[in-house]
Image (cartoon, rainbow, N blue to C red; front, side, top):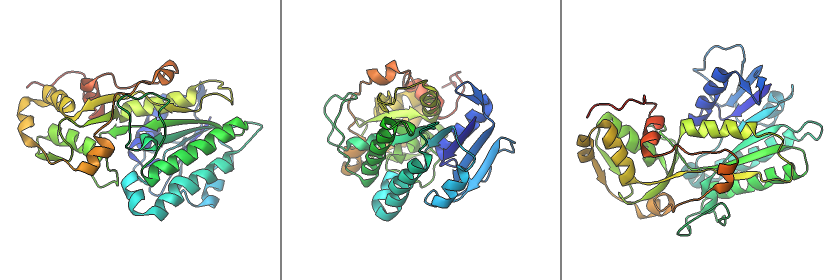
Length: 321
């Protein structure tokens, strides 16, 4: 089994690589080669199964070299995040759209279509969301990032229809808890809140306590990505895009779970200074039903307490207050 992860040095990519190496197999076959592609690939463990390919995904020749020996499964995670892509349209256009289309084109194989698991985004829906949502909600992206994600979903479905790439796209929500460093994500406040509360540090939240977001831990996200790759024998004319099940939680609910875990004193360190535009984009997420995804075996973290535990890699034993 030959597997490729693009964006392997990212927050989710690193955890995915580690889990695949620990499991040692995918789709019932031993992983013989795990290829990692990103601009920086330092800090990975010395493992004979790893093949490191440092470079930019926009380099078509690099993609060609990485795929030269054939590939069975690709996890396509690399992207310029939403905020950064909005500020630098050219960078987002090159990475999020053109490089993704180039990868799809190079993967085309009618004799043995490779599996491609694509990390799409809830950004495809935009901010004009109905009071309650399900998997049939209209896509109306309000950011270039979301528009490009939707374009790649369409191309992926078309190549699946043609029997040339066995594509599966997952629309990801806010994944937590990302490292506390600039990352171009407008939803970074979701992770920053978790880290600050756990560390007992003051934090000013840019959305209100009543703001509701869609949440998922990186652990849960990785499990869903692997599950997508292992869905067996999908008809090429079948469903190819899934809105993952999510936890719809207010900031107040997340703070309640954090206080239960780390102590009530932490509440006094959290203040609020809502940004109207940010709250419209990421703080007004309605309840979301996803029966189709659930029937396919995808899942969320379960509840706010489990989200906090998974996101911060904590043990199941609650710390004393």
